[in-house]
Length: 155
Image (spheres, rainbow, N blue to C red):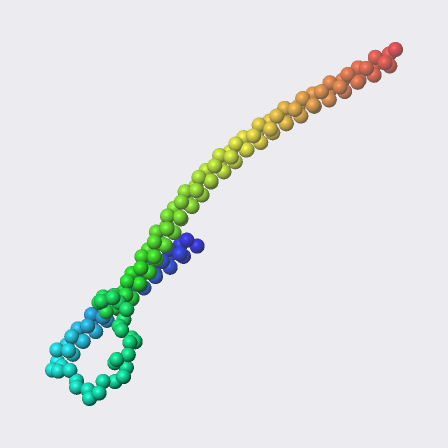
Protein backbone atom coordinates (compact mmCIF):
# COMPACT_ATOMS: atom_id res chain seq x y z
CA UNK A 1 0.00 0.00 0.00
CA UNK A 2 2.83 2.38 0.88
CA UNK A 3 4.68 1.46 -2.31
CA UNK A 4 1.62 2.43 -4.36
CA UNK A 5 1.31 5.74 -2.50
CA UNK A 6 4.99 6.51 -3.12
CA UNK A 7 4.67 5.57 -6.80
CA UNK A 8 1.54 7.73 -7.16
CA UNK A 9 3.27 10.68 -5.48
CA UNK A 10 6.27 10.37 -7.79
CA UNK A 11 4.08 10.16 -10.90
CA UNK A 12 2.05 13.15 -9.71
CA UNK A 13 5.22 15.18 -9.15
CA UNK A 14 6.40 14.33 -12.67
CA UNK A 15 3.01 15.29 -14.12
CA UNK A 16 2.88 18.58 -12.22
CA UNK A 17 6.46 19.40 -13.26
CA UNK A 18 5.48 18.75 -16.88
CA UNK A 19 2.40 20.96 -16.54
CA UNK A 20 4.46 23.77 -15.01
CA UNK A 21 7.02 23.53 -17.79
CA UNK A 22 4.31 23.56 -20.44
CA UNK A 23 2.54 26.55 -18.88
CA UNK A 24 5.77 28.51 -18.46
CA UNK A 25 6.62 27.93 -22.11
CA UNK A 26 3.09 28.83 -23.17
CA UNK A 27 3.05 32.10 -21.22
CA UNK A 28 6.55 33.03 -22.40
CA UNK A 29 5.58 32.36 -26.02
CA UNK A 30 2.28 34.24 -25.58
CA UNK A 31 4.10 37.17 -24.01
CA UNK A 32 6.64 37.24 -26.83
CA UNK A 33 3.84 37.09 -29.42
CA UNK A 34 1.92 39.89 -27.70
CA UNK A 35 5.05 42.04 -27.53
CA UNK A 36 5.74 41.43 -31.22
CA UNK A 37 2.13 42.30 -32.09
CA UNK A 38 2.29 45.53 -30.09
CA UNK A 39 5.52 46.54 -31.82
CA UNK A 40 3.93 46.08 -35.27
CA UNK A 41 0.93 48.21 -34.41
CA UNK A 42 1.37 51.86 -35.27
CA UNK A 43 -1.42 53.51 -33.36
CA UNK A 44 -4.41 52.51 -31.30
CA UNK A 45 -7.64 51.97 -33.15
CA UNK A 46 -10.08 54.89 -33.18
CA UNK A 47 -13.60 54.09 -32.01
CA UNK A 48 -16.49 56.46 -32.66
CA UNK A 49 -18.39 55.83 -29.46
CA UNK A 50 -17.02 53.79 -26.55
CA UNK A 51 -19.21 50.80 -25.80
CA UNK A 52 -21.22 50.90 -22.57
CA UNK A 53 -19.35 47.98 -21.13
CA UNK A 54 -16.12 49.98 -21.04
CA UNK A 55 -17.47 52.28 -18.38
CA UNK A 56 -18.96 49.53 -16.21
CA UNK A 57 -17.03 48.07 -13.29
CA UNK A 58 -16.69 44.42 -14.07
CA UNK A 59 -13.86 42.23 -15.08
CA UNK A 60 -10.69 43.98 -14.05
CA UNK A 61 -8.03 41.43 -14.89
CA UNK A 62 -6.80 38.02 -14.00
CA UNK A 63 -6.59 38.54 -10.26
CA UNK A 64 -2.86 37.90 -10.32
CA UNK A 65 -1.94 41.07 -8.41
CA UNK A 66 0.42 42.43 -11.05
CA UNK A 67 2.24 39.11 -11.41
CA UNK A 68 3.49 37.70 -14.68
CA UNK A 69 0.87 35.93 -16.80
CA UNK A 70 0.16 32.45 -15.49
CA UNK A 71 2.01 33.03 -12.22
CA UNK A 72 -1.06 32.21 -10.11
CA UNK A 73 -1.70 28.82 -11.70
CA UNK A 74 2.00 27.99 -11.68
CA UNK A 75 2.12 28.82 -7.94
CA UNK A 76 -0.85 26.53 -7.35
CA UNK A 77 0.87 23.74 -9.30
CA UNK A 78 4.13 24.27 -7.40
CA UNK A 79 2.19 24.01 -4.13
CA UNK A 80 0.62 20.77 -5.38
CA UNK A 81 4.03 19.43 -6.30
CA UNK A 82 5.35 20.33 -2.84
CA UNK A 83 2.36 18.53 -1.27
CA UNK A 84 3.08 15.41 -3.33
CA UNK A 85 6.77 15.55 -2.37
CA UNK A 86 5.79 15.85 1.30
CA UNK A 87 3.38 12.94 0.95
CA UNK A 88 6.15 10.84 -0.63
CA UNK A 89 8.63 11.74 2.12
CA UNK A 90 6.07 11.09 4.87
CA UNK A 91 5.13 7.74 3.36
CA UNK A 92 8.78 6.69 3.05
CA UNK A 93 9.42 7.73 6.65
CA UNK A 94 6.35 5.83 7.83
CA UNK A 95 7.44 2.78 5.82
CA UNK A 96 10.89 2.89 7.45
CA UNK A 97 9.34 3.22 10.91
CA UNK A 98 6.92 0.38 10.23
CA UNK A 99 9.74 -1.84 8.95
CA UNK A 100 11.82 -1.10 12.05
CA UNK A 101 8.88 -1.86 14.35
CA UNK A 102 8.18 -5.06 12.41
CA UNK A 103 11.81 -6.19 12.79
CA UNK A 104 11.71 -5.43 16.52
CA UNK A 105 8.45 -7.33 16.92
CA UNK A 106 9.83 -10.29 14.95
CA UNK A 107 12.98 -10.40 17.10
CA UNK A 108 10.86 -10.24 20.26
CA UNK A 109 8.63 -13.02 18.93
CA UNK A 110 11.67 -15.20 18.09
CA UNK A 111 13.03 -14.72 21.62
CA UNK A 112 9.64 -15.55 23.13
CA UNK A 113 9.34 -18.62 20.90
CA UNK A 114 12.80 -19.83 21.93
CA UNK A 115 11.93 -19.30 25.60
CA UNK A 116 8.66 -21.23 25.23
CA UNK A 117 10.37 -24.05 23.33
CA UNK A 118 12.95 -24.28 26.13
CA UNK A 119 10.16 -24.41 28.71
CA UNK A 120 8.43 -27.16 26.73
CA UNK A 121 11.67 -29.15 26.62
CA UNK A 122 12.15 -28.75 30.39
CA UNK A 123 8.53 -29.78 31.03
CA UNK A 124 8.94 -32.81 28.74
CA UNK A 125 12.05 -33.86 30.67
CA UNK A 126 10.22 -33.38 33.97
CA UNK A 127 7.26 -35.39 32.65
CA UNK A 128 9.58 -38.25 31.59
CA UNK A 129 11.33 -38.18 34.98
CA UNK A 130 7.98 -38.27 36.83
CA UNK A 131 6.70 -41.05 34.58
CA UNK A 132 9.84 -43.09 35.40
CA UNK A 133 9.23 -42.42 39.11
CA UNK A 134 5.60 -43.53 38.77
CA UNK A 135 6.72 -46.64 36.92
CA UNK A 136 9.24 -47.41 39.67
CA UNK A 137 6.62 -46.89 42.38
CA UNK A 138 4.17 -49.07 40.50
CA UNK A 139 6.75 -51.87 40.39
CA UNK A 140 7.50 -51.34 44.09
CA UNK A 141 3.80 -51.52 44.96
CA UNK A 142 3.38 -54.66 42.86
CA UNK A 143 6.37 -56.26 44.63
CA UNK A 144 5.00 -55.19 48.01
CA UNK A 145 1.56 -56.56 47.13
CA UNK A 146 3.12 -59.91 46.08
CA UNK A 147 5.19 -60.05 49.24
CA UNK A 148 2.13 -59.22 51.33
CA UNK A 149 0.14 -61.88 49.49
CA UNK A 150 2.87 -64.45 50.14
CA UNK A 151 3.09 -63.53 53.80
CA UNK A 152 -0.65 -63.69 54.25
CA UNK A 153 -0.82 -67.01 52.44
CA UNK A 154 1.76 -68.56 54.74
CA UNK A 155 -0.05 -67.57 57.91
